[in-house]
Image 1 (cartoon, rainbow, N blue to C red):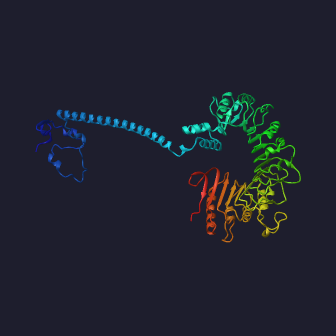
Image 2 (image 1 turned 30 degrees about the vertical axis):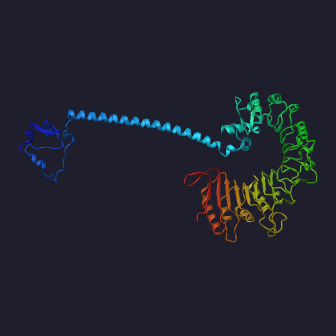
Image 3 (image 1 turned 90 degrees about the vertical axis):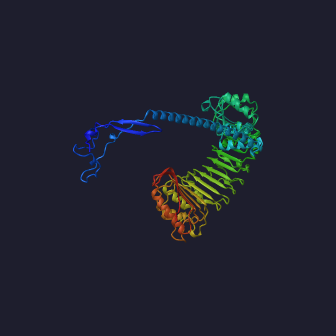
Length: 579
């Protein structure tokens, strides 16, 4: 066998069979010794030993990839490859052009579909039910929406052509005008400005545009200290008809309202001394429904017959005590609000139609006789005490706000009461004293009370809301135990509440259940940790269920965000009883 040294100088001829031809190439062998560093030869070793099995005592050795022989393509193969590449490039370009064309066609098709759908909507709208609504009725609907939701007339005008026309017909919207100072005006041009459904008018362009849109419809005016605009208003509108007027505390000339027509006036609200105006209104306005004035201004009505149809009355303070006869003639009043008002006279005022009453620093405490009252709100009765029992058989809602020590609540007897809300704003001890005065927990409490078993529940609401609750938990449990009709219990911003409250009001047995009809329990507070309450609340729910008095809703409400153990932040947390 030849040695490797002999192979180095030999030529190897390779015949490759092509397509119909034979190509011959001459390859010169490389120096294997030099170009195979991973493989060694021995000059005395026969090449045939290379095919022998590898020895187990030596690691296997492999050739490097660089030692492999690479055969370059022929010129013909190169030409054929170039032709194939050109053909493939042309095909790709053609496919991309076809894709772009189809994408343009899809865009055009989508635009056409949208256009056809718009035509379809318009054709359907012509036969829709809303299309059959007369513009006058649609105008009334838009007016109600704008006034009830403090909306903008311009928004309604942008909905459709029909809404645009109906809004233009809604003269009641355009006739609500607020005459303000230029500093309060937020508009730099003559565009529409809406503030609580009033159109701001602080300059001549605003005023002329608004009066043009209002046409001859009776105006609803709110005047805030702008005599220049008022003077211009009188020049533009020769004899304006007024349906509502609100005058803030500002000094106006006596002849400002000389040309105004107050016969359609329905609502009147006056701050400040405008007795001359009120005397005139008392003579002309025969359909007044709502009046909000001071006690002195109220006495300026020289013709009580103009107030026979009065429905809502608000009296805001009086320097001199009012005579009772000023209210006796208003038997049609259903809503009355008295603020810092004094009456003189031994007898009470009978208002048989009164349903909603608000008392704020009124003297004497109970100057009225209103057997049909359904809602009563009492504010800031500074420690007023009252001994006489007041029977209100139809009272549904009683709200006591900001009273220092409202022990007078124990004197109300309201068997039909549904809602009782107490917001005393007092210290911890006063809350318990107040609640114990309403629902005594033992015989002999509340001064001259009868034994506890003989006491009749005067206030037994279905919904009880207590602000700033601060009574001892055991005392609170005894007080709540006096309630027999309570379905909703709300503790709002309680002081020092803890999990002991749940333990105190938890059922001891099926026969001893505090608040047996309770279905909803809500606690709302400013701060405090949430985690201890969650487990205590779940245990409380379980005991209620086992005692046969399950709750349907138990919730924590928080003014700030609550952080749950999972890391989630919420403002409210509803806990359910997992059986």
